[in-house]
Amino acid sequence: MLRLRIIVATLSALAILLFLFFILFSIHFKSPLLPPAYTTITFQNKSSPHQQFSLLIGVLTRPDKYDRRHFLRLVYGTQSSSIAKIDVKFVFCSLTKPEQRVFIALEIVRFNDIIILNCSENMNSGKTYKYFSTLPQILSRQYNYVMKADDDVFIRLEPLALSLQPLSRFDLYYGFVIPCPSMNPFVHYMSGMGFVLSWDLVEWIGNSEIPMNHTFGPEDKMVGQWLNDGNKAKNRFSNKPVMYDYPGTNGRCSHQLIPDTVAVHRLKRWEQWLHVLNYFNVTKDIELYNIV
Image (cartoon, rainbow, N blue to C red; front, side, top):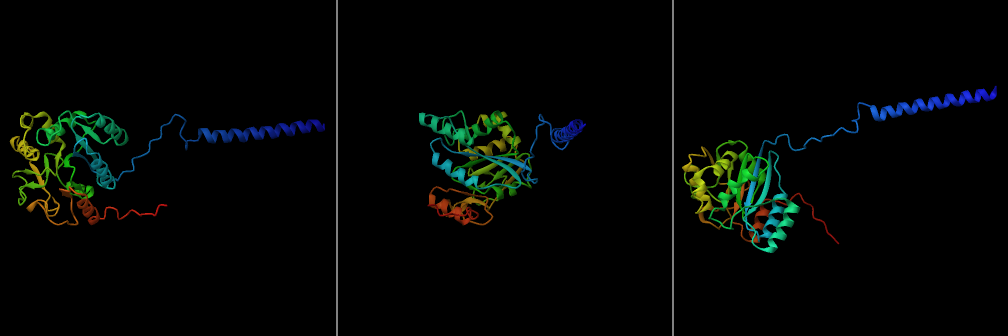
């Protein structure tokens, strides 16, 4: 009789343990609060909800200017915009030296920020045309705006984005109008220091015979001529005085640094870059530590 009671008690205890194990198993694997094993969890992009447009900045440079590219990566890598997605790429023509093919391949693997055009390196013999006309063919996405910039210009990304935000996303030509004293963006053209085209104009350059047949000459002047000849760029904006040449470098195109600057051009020497970066407190939020 005692043995029977022990057996019954043991079976009861086992039943209770099995029941508890079943409940725990069900909670862990079947709870609607947890996804099944095959569910893909997608994390939402944490970019700013105010992000409204996209901009590609193509810095036209030369393959051998490794130091300048690395420096500009630091300059633009410390900046961001709360209202725009801005990509900075370095643009040059076909590689001609064995060391370029190796060193630039390393840059591409590491940074993925280089566009190599099918052309011979030049300034005023079609490189800018090749840049704009090639983009619709090689990019996997469209941008609202595309900028052509020199590698001796410092562009402040957030002020640039803020100045573009209220402007048209269509048929837009933006920059620093030449001649220097002019304030009329519909006369002449935008300086090659850095000018912006809306995406529809980039596509037009790639499809129209007007730019295709006029690629030789001062590159910024040629772009203005294309747009005039094609009756394009009904929306034009010259952002003076916040775009300018470095003080004392180019007559009336130059003036002293000002707080609301968008772009400073003609930075040829390191002391000029130092002056500009210090003036705008580029490293103000970075703590420096003594490293032993």
